[in-house]
Structure formats: C-alpha cells, structure tokens
Image 1 (cartoon, rainbow over the protein chains, first blue to last red):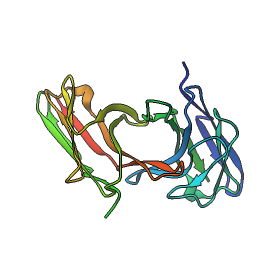
Image 2: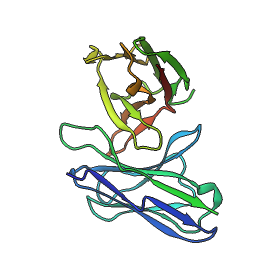
Image 3: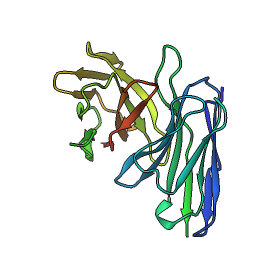
Length: 113
Length: 113
C-alpha cells in the first residue's frame, strides 16, 4: 500500500520557469490538499480539493494552480516560479467513509534560484 | 486570534520526564482533532486522534475541552525517540462539501539524555 506518492522529491528551478508537482493516493480518499512548509511558518494550505471535480483556494494560493485530475491525482503547478516559492511542499489526502485522518506524501523540496 | 495556536517551544526535557503540550483553536464549529508528529525533514504522521472523553495510547494521553476550545497532549516517561515537532490539527466541516484541516505551527520537543 503506497499511500500518498509525490514526485519529484527534489527540484531546482530558475526564476520564471514552470513546473508541476504530482501527487497520487491509493486510499480512495475524497479530499486532497497541497501545503507548503517554511521555517517558522508551519504548514500553510495552498489549495485543496474536497472531492473529484472541485478545488478551492487555501491560505496562500497566489502563484499556484491545481488540477484534480481524477479521484487519485491532484497536481500543483507553478506557472512562473519565484524565489519566494522556495519551500517544502506536501501533498495530503483524507476522508473516506468512517475515517478523516490525513496522510501525507514525503514532500518535495523546491528551490527557486 | 489565529485559527490554531501552539507554543512553539522548544521544550527541552530529560529522559523519563513528563511533558505536556497545549493547543487552542478558534472555530467552535470544528469537529475533529488530532495530534501529528513530524520528524526533521520528514512528512507529518498521525500520532493520535483526540476525543472529549480523553484517549490514551501507551505513554501518550490526549484530551479535548470543547468548552475552552483547548487540546492537550501528555507524554509520560519521555524517550530520546520522542524528539520531534508535534502538530495540533483541527478538522472543520462547513457544509456543502467544504472543509479543511488546519494545522498549528507545531511544538518542538527535544528529549535530552
């Protein structure tokens, strides 16, 4: 049981480049989330998807877009990377019948230079 | 008032000590509560759920006080392996398929030999 799988694990981008972070879960969860974690800031919600076909902004959505491709996959796109987007990104999923605990991917360490 | 507040610590305690962490939340409509553990440069992992009646898992005891909007985690007989950051997590469902997991910034614990 893989749980939540994120790719890539590490990435270095130049300012202005674009990239997509991929996330997939195999737990039949309805909800999926993207967080970023910066030192001293804790986990901050970028976007979430309560169910297939829906997405909503979180606390820090600017500079990001998301796609809930199907129930399993939720991708995060940076259209024009900025140094302020240097962070660790975590994908999470939760909520199926009888259970709402969230499970996290291993994270993507992104550096924008 | 921030949605979920925790003392960031660090808490530096000797092996064998008992340590308690507290967390407050602002949304009285929040339904479910959790403690997560995060090791350095790793993803958060579920430690335990928190119930009004209190729940215990070995050396760990969690308690919820809905009237005061307060959550606690007690660790008895601390081990070196307990060194980590402990995150308070609040689940809030606001209807029409809209809900979020909100994380506190975490409390850092260092258990010293």
